[in-house]
Image (cartoon, rainbow, N blue to C red; front, side):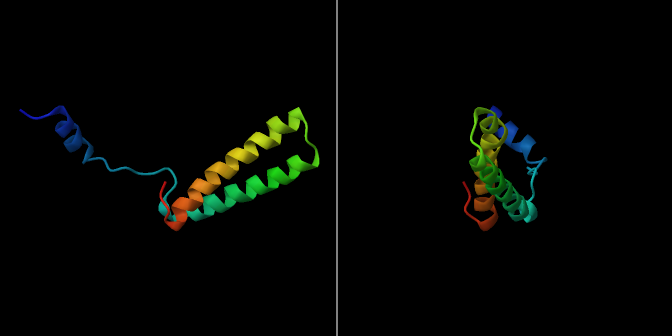
Length: 79
């Protein structure tokens, strides 16, 4: 009697994982996200308000966060 986990394992072996951003483009995507993060942070520091926090601050922090993770993956530090 086979375990259901083994059946899932065998079924999954026929469809390999394909990432959304390939290994060859991770460095470019990371650089672009970090550049966007730096640019939005610079624009946010010129005029800090609640509206600019929503329009510039939050997207800047998200671009930094994803850019750093992609840069780690691009240079071989897997998280």
